[in-house]
Amino acid sequence: MTEFTINERNRVKRGHKRACYDEETVYGILDSHFLCHVAYEVDGQPQIIPTSYWREGNRLYWHGASKSRMIREVTSGKEACVSVAHLDGLVLARSAFNTSANYRSVICYGRPELVTDTAEFDRQMELFFEQLAPGRWSQLRPITGQERKATALVVMEITDAAAKVRDGGPGDGDTEDVDWPVWSGHIPLTTQQRGPVGAPEGVRAALNHRLMPGHDWNNR
Picture 1 (cartoon, rainbow, N blue to C red):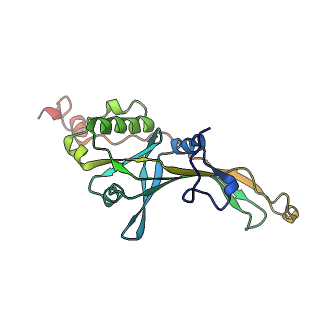
Picture 2 (cartoon, one colour):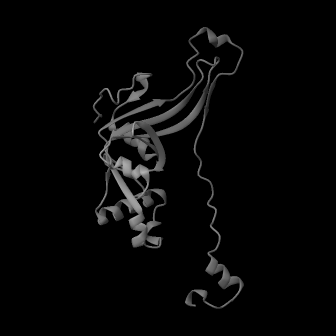
């Protein structure tokens, strides 16, 4: 099993028994989500931005507006930190001190760079959309030159990483709290995908249907 090297940057100090440094655990947590938080520094001031991401191999990718400050700063040669977390449950102990939560979390470190190759840009954007909605990329209107110019793609090789995981119930069963007369246990939480909600008809399609039946408004 391949593991990330433990060093002063990624070593889990509090709750170290819940730490995992193996690639299987780190990658598994990363691949089960697509929302991350990117942290970086601007003139000594810490900043953090939520954004969508995806992984290929030992690299993380995310995109944004090409003129955004986040893109400009993280591709200026600085180190960045990317965090991903899942809330899996509430852990209700018999005391406030032992009450906790179940979670899976990962923190990754690296030095982001811009993806400048057009073919790689297209390949990665397709990979991202195929993870969101398989089969949809080929159905979408092709990206325009202006949209491509306005979009920046960032890649970050993961140089250091650590995962931290908690699961199961409260740890008050082996203490004097076990006789305290209140319910104790854990409540699992999940993110649920609900039924799709369609978008309204486009303006032209609506006009074709309502105002000029049988006429193709798009040919005007």
